[in-house]
Image 1 (spheres, rainbow, N blue to C red):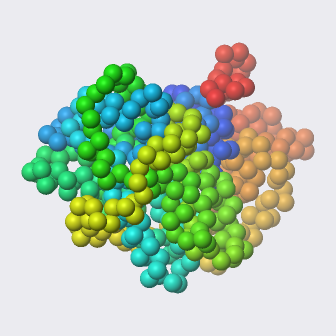
Image 2: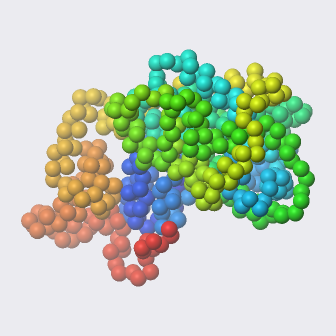
Image 3: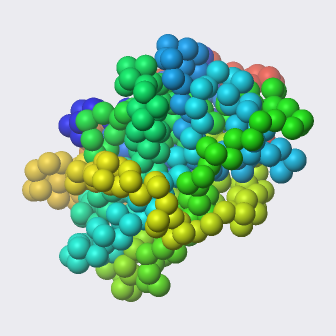
Length: 459
């Protein structure tokens, strides 16, 4: 899927469950959600698949559209690709061998941790940063949510994005080459990536910088974890360490905060949490940031350990991965390893096309019209209360004003203005109620002691 095609989004809203409570709308960092006819509506142009809306929904109305795990049965060779963070989900009473054995029992024929050849990616990023002196700081493309955020909201920073793919792409090519060496044909091989977050799911379905991913299916990590826990044995199993001979300490820690940035010089910085990332990008775009060479930006708190498709506590996950990493060598030890024979095949596959900006926070393509609309927004805001209550179906008064100039809302959507107009006899009570019912649904204001969305429900 090319960059000109619509971006795939895994997040969907179940109209039967949605109660229009505004929790998702007020938590969305890109203001991509509105309430229309009592239901949450996600704007695909603004959504970055960070998953905060799904976490906040008390009615479990926002869900992930995902591949069925039974899809693996269509292939002779069924390779499961997962980041090391999946191992960190399991209590340390379970060994790596037991986890690998359980995955094979589920139906996979080969198991690969995607960070195994991480040394290639590390060297490739270093090479890119060394050659590109112009666009600093270089910004990691590891987190798809951050990449899309920059594309739509900070388009002037798109050239700063490192033109290198993420570990799951490297891991997929690594697995494919390994299986081909064993005599497998491409059409017999199924590559299934286990994702810790919704954004990576979307990035495989609609790659940001290539036509199509070589991955054949996406598996929800939470779902797979639960399946493994049901069948995992705490008894001794076959030794699978030969499948991890190229896994390194650097690879295990890569998906954690500073797991990437620490390899690219003293003037590198790591920021996690999408709201923290947005605040920093605002300063960066305004040239308020001191000289930095490399930025590692992750949408989730504690990076992938806090992924929205993980089951475990993110702090425990980090601790387990750090303990596990101590048992492995640094990737520097692999300079003379046989894996280096694959360098000529894998390194070219790491290079991505330049990532294009897709600005979604513009009022109009025509600069003159955009300035005119901006002026109109300022005039409208003078009449709005500035309470940011969300009762209008927009996350705040600024967003409502923007919707108005884009002809997606009207002044009467503000309940405070409507109340004032009733007092001044500019609008009848019945008309005001009708306006509210159009926004929130006909029976929304009837007394109901069993309604969903009470305090802390669903959290």
